[in-house]
Length: 353
Image (cartoon, rainbow, N blue to C red):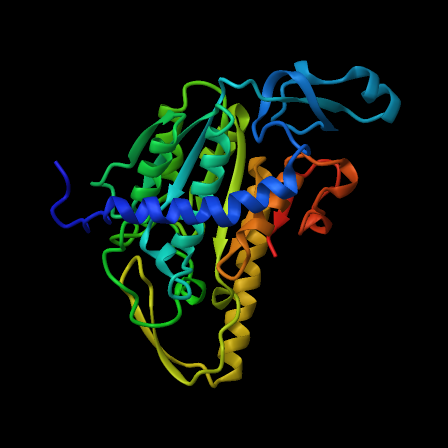
């Protein structure tokens, strides 16, 4: 039985109109940019060689190319084009923090557009897509699982779920997680409503029976503990972390006194943004979080695509295609933070925009 406190889903026509707009604006542009440059978005077990790359700790040793390894004096593995019966899964964080951003282009809107376009692009070529949706309303609410299917109607149903209105709007133009202190060691339980991303990832481990491609779509504002289950997913599946962010989460503007509210816990804080020291501390903590997050994703073995609320979705997806190796090697995107990790061993990362 549906939760009586949950917001009503939008009218089915809203999802249809949004998907039609994305098909006419984004998919048509992608068709023109990518025609003939790629065969499939999915990579993993298959028969057609897609790429050769440096060996990583989570790779299957059976995929080592010994000829290339001997020639370069460094272990390299073969990466194959994915079989058509493989499925793609979207693990989507729909907690309250993703409702932040400019009106009509919040992180939730960006996530919905990305998932809808990529799902439609995959299903048009015969691939199946499924989803696990995490609502971040506490342990009592189970994640929503949409089985993998290959049809436009299924994509519409998924999009219908993604654009459901949030439970409550923010009361300030900024979120507070970046300036909140880290959780104390040994904390018994997270605050009510806090995102527990590890629950979503562990739920997915019980749902994803066969190897596939997994897109973890989240802003990664979460309680600790998600790194290990993400790494476990990456050992079995081809994992892409799609990180949602807004520029205001990295730099606090000088707009005078404001009331900041953490959208997930409801905690509020009155600050005066005219203070230079406060803005500098905010930026410093944001930079530290960025470095920690990118290091955690790299250790987990997940490729990373960063999507900002101010980015163009087509540009983001083209960079994603380049990241996944469906364009000539010379045109691939340079990792946004390759200088922070070994260039031959770290998973790839692309930043949109």
